[in-house]
Image 1 (cartoon, one colour):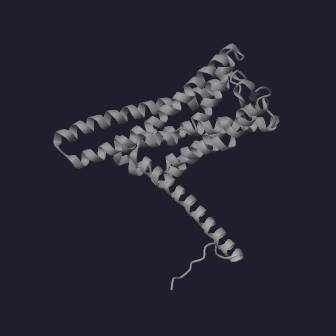
Image 2: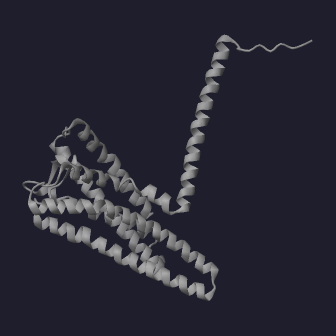
Amino acid sequence: MFVVALAVSDILMSTCCMPFSVVTLIRGQWIFGDTFCRFHGFGVFTFGLASLHTMGLIAVSRYFCIVKPERYIVLFKKQKILLYIGVVWCTAFIGSVPPFLFSHGGFEFQPGKAMCLYTFDTNIAYTVFIECVYVATPLTLIIVCYAKVFYTVSRSNQVFSLENNPQVLRANVEEAKVTKTLAAVMAGFACCWLPVCIIDYTDAAYGEPTLPRQAYLTYGFLVYLSSTINPFIYGATNKHFRRQYRVIFNNMFCMKVCRCSETFDADYSSDCRRHGPKVQITSLA
């Protein structure tokens, strides 16, 4: 369910924010007005925070599933999971609202990045709060949780191997594979957003954009790339996802072939009714 929530934030980023940046790059200017610009920046900010905090939830759930399984059953029931996801989205929403209240700055169009974003040097107090509470805290939590999870998995595998307990070892290996997949997703997210944060910190320190245009174009590319790479990571690291992808693509291909066949049959039947059969079959006496 957490993976679905992460997919939702990625889809919202890709559909609600990315197309406007593409149009801006094509037209060479922002054509959607100042009001929509603020909401565009709000969307990028909110969806990015929601993705990061959802990954934090995933890391915590993995921690309890592997390290403290007796508490996992209690803490991660379906109703509680939905509650956690709701809290994450509310938190991301609340954290993204203050820039609307600033007398100047806030969400502004940044030409080099081809998108509207929060200007980090607008309000240093708010920027420090966001970076420490909304970014650094979940990142630290993710690192600590996955470190303890991998340590526990490694230690458990050694114990079960010595005890010659193949069933428990197999189950533990499966859990480790799932954890590695989710950790790879987090690594991909970090690889995309770490350069973004460095560019933001650099601009905030100098009070103005100082890097080459290519750096800011890469900035926008990485922001949106973080919302599109997860399906590829799932497929590359987990055979179950690869199997499901094959099923989905096969079904899509079969549906397309069947529709083409139905269209051909319908056109052929209509043509036969209008003009008669094209081939006459003659019986031999």
